[in-house]
Image (cartoon, rainbow, N blue to C red):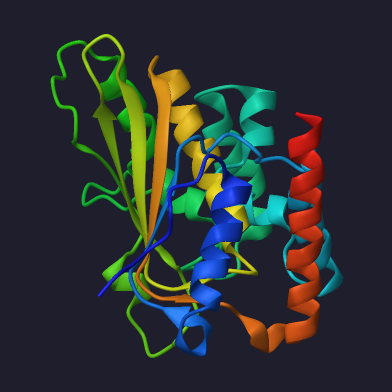
Length: 259
């Protein structure tokens, strides 16, 4: 079974439509939900009033705001400040020791993408490896750019929700030669749509934009498959959630008039 969400033009619209679709499902949850974002860099900053509303709601409930969630996937500010590939070392040496929760999991998907354990003992930077292959004219592949996050050694346990939720991302060069764009499909094993989804979409969009820019290709679409999705209502009341969605809808309506 699967549940398609109508394709959306930007991150905020994709989040709102996905919430609507899953919220209407039995028990406000669904499996194999498919979300597609045409431009994952659009409506993806705190300057957007609807994004800011979601972030403020989460912060008020003592949850990670949108920007913090996005940073677990890609620390965009760090990349802008130090540039590539230097910012990888800054993250490893200065940021990671401060945010690591335990040996198996720092809470940052970015860590796993840039430090995949290797049999030879030297971690593999999967992100920069894709950039280098995109830059290499001898690499003819259009659909062999993969990012692994799930680690069966560290992640298989009896916890229902703890640990990583993003499992894998696959990147493809699509379109005619000379006008190809880099697209991404990401798979989540478990997905809370109020607390995490918007930040996840924004973070994945920033990661995709970074790889495309450094690889000298254009940014394509983002597709997310939530193998289990849930409107996480146990953390707030239904009236609170209804008020948040109404506020976001009004902010989006105002935004549409301005542009």
